[in-house]
Length: 247
Ligand SMILES: NC(=O)c1ccc[n+]([C@@H]2O[C@H](COP(=O)([O-])OP(=O)(O)OC[C@H]3O[C@@H](n4cnc5c(N)ncnc54)[C@H](OP(=O)(O)O)[C@@H]3O)[C@@H](O)[C@H]2O)c1
Image (cartoon, rainbow, N blue to C red; front, side, top):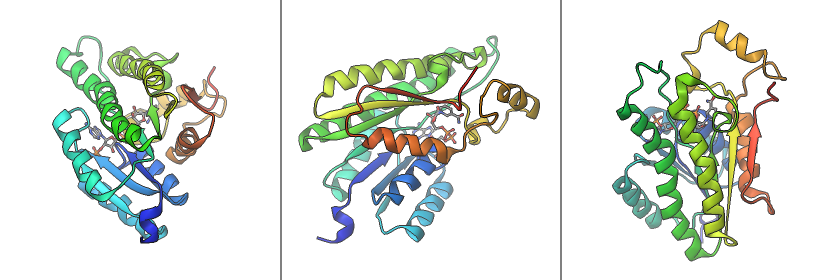
């Protein structure tokens, strides 16, 4: 068999940019074949694929699918099964936020956020978990947020609730899949990605005062921890907070 087909494989949702793209590069640097899921941004997905292929001797597959839609996930799984025999790691990273005042918050937007940030990881963990159980092993890492633990922002109360829910999901899937699949969670604080591109300089400076490292994280710094959470041998049902130290 070709060497590339003997490698381990990671599936990263929302891997076209930000933390997901950095995670794809991190895993590729450790020799993993990479499956990048995304929903819209073909251009950025192609770019990250090309970047990885130019640096590493791994396979990179792009799968466009909305993780909040069960039919999309079923299609994604059948595509993946044709190309890969096993999925070693699943990183539930895709996420959205819609920051507004309370007056502007709508039930439709709340549902949209829950569908992507919570139902998405539920569906992915259910379907990919089944494959992992059949192969007898697997690792799942959910990307939550300190907003789901102890950093609350009324402008993103819907997002914060989705991220708290993802922590609960982590515990339940860890129990459900033990001892075959290890399920962990990484909860970042502020990270320099497009998700935060509209924050004003003054707001960022104010937030930085509460961070011991006095800056937002770079996506690559979160990716290192995600890789650790996906590969550390005795880590299970853990919630790893990575926020530069927050006071
Ligand atoms: N940035 C932060 O400060 C921060 C802090 C804590 C936690 N997080 C969490 O970390 C994760 C990544 O955040 P990020 O800042 O890297 O986000 P980002 O730069 O906004 O990228 C979001 C990614 O998710 C994908 N995506 C969005 N909706 C999707 C859907 N329905 N189905 C499949 N993919 C979808 C996007 O694909 P397209 O490119 O196709 O749109 C993109 O790849 C999120 O779960 C976020 O909540 C972020």
